Image (cartoon, rainbow, N blue to C red; front, top):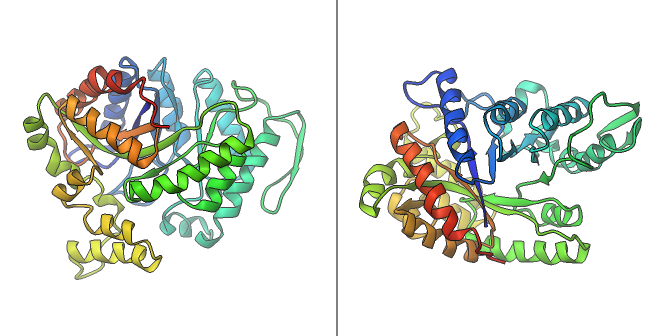
Amino acid sequence: MKFSHFSHVWAKPNMTPHERYQQLWRELELCDTLDYDFGFCVEHHFRPDESWMSSPSLYTVGAGARTKNMRIGPMGYVVPLYNSLRLAEEIAICDQMVGGRMEVGLVPGINPIYFGPFGLDYADRKLPTLEYVAYLRAAFGKQPFSFEGEIHQAENVTLAVPPAQTPHPPLWMMSRDPETLEFCAANGISTGYFLVYPQQEAAARYRVYLADWEKAGWDFKPNIAYSTVVYVDETDEKALKNGLERASMAYEGLLPPGAPGENFVDRVENFAARFKDRNEPGAYDIISNLFNPEYLLKNNLIFVGSPETVAARLKEASVNGMFNNFMGEFNFSDLPEDDLMRSIRLFGEEVIPALRSFEPF
């Protein structure tokens, strides 16, 4: 298995953005000494109460300056928000700046609020993202390059700086959509999912993805990632005391801002209703219980415990959920930094070695 430090770069109580970024670098510096494979961040916009990461390129360069071993990058760039050529230039320069350690996630964008202020239509986000894979490969190929697509175009353009990796940094596209997964398998793109999608349902889709991957003839195994909260402490009792309640509130920022007169229970139910409307009862059930610590723990949706407990539960989930890369969100809620860093250290020193040679598929 492989292991990632994953961060929404949540807003933290009593911290300025500068202080939060400095804490993020301390997290990654520690991970880099402990055999973590990857460091990833999100791209979110316009929610000061939620994520303070709207520039994945800056994350990549900042993380690269403070690490030596980990592979780092966005998970992922919200492609429709960018000028296609400008993004290609940024990716190439970032990859050079981090010495060829960049991983590139490309996503259509999960939240409609990212699009309006940029004057863009949320409904038109999928095609630009899928087509950008071909555009990016053309941009990083023979120079000068041209490209003529439905969305992206370029004519006789020469990039000043190519990426350090040939032909380009590895690509990811986090998705549970069957059509997108088929596209990813055909194009050699790694993928993954978030805790709100039931592991057993995900496994069925990713088995198809793996079969399609094999049919495509790729000579390397894809990453299938699973992202959720993790907290490790010296004993189960200490972990549950320090981490469980906080872990159950980790994803409060995913809820839309409350309307006037709307209480927390209403916000959760209204958010969950979206999944019921899309005929996703499993996801609806998880979202309805996203802030129920006993439910999350019982269903292996978060990992809180001693190193032995977390390793055993993570191993079980990786088989049930068909993932070989764990994207752990270590910093959440108001978790104190001493507890945060101890959790990262124990995970690196004891959980990673216990599962390093394990292959779920």
